Image (cartoon, rainbow over all chains, first blue to last red; front, side):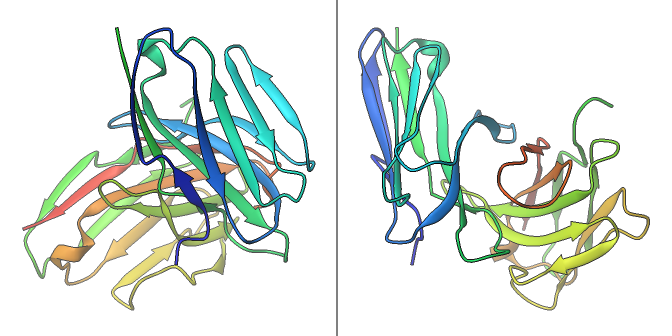
Amino acid sequence: TQLLEQSPQFLSIQEGENLTVYCNSSSVFSSLQWYRQEPGEGPVLLVTVVTGGEVKKLKRLTFQFGDARKDSSLHITAAQPGDTGLYLCAGALFSGNTPLVFGKGTRLSVIA
Amino acid sequence: GAGVSQSPRYKVAKRGQDVALRCDPISGHVSLFWYQQALGQGPEFLTYFQNEAQLDKSGLPSDRFFAERPEGSVSTLKIQRTQQEDSAVYLCASSLESRRLNTEAFFGQGTRLTVV
């Protein structure tokens, strides 16, 4: 059973379009992170959200943590080919010292 | 170095062979994590060290997997009698403090293990 469900699994869009990817769980997380991973590389942290309802912006990327701390979304405005990659959400469960758990990722392809 | 370094980058092993994967974390980072990432999947937790102490090894899939960090710096993940299902990218990450999520974890490029 996957603790963090990401959707969509694959997304191919044209340059300039907007998109949203989702990370959902039935469990509550103390905080949640989004990573981007390019082929042959390790994941690189984009943002950490810790407060329910929190919104963080990183240039054209907007991250939101759900009020109940069970879900998160990543919205990209005016996507560019450089945004292409695997986007992973990862969370730490509220219930103590548990390892960081990852979703399966959303593979984004932005076509010029 | 400036980042987490893993070696080798690529490893091809014959089924039944033992392998050792090395991780050099960022200098001064207390916590070190190993993850396994199968093709098309997100990383799966294997084990975690705080300094030289292995605090959590609940993710190791079998007793063929063993990890150590004897001096609290470099870590080695050893897989004995490799099997085809062990084929994956093995990622190492380090962070400055505890495993609590507010501390950023920096990942290495990974070692891609292929068992033939």
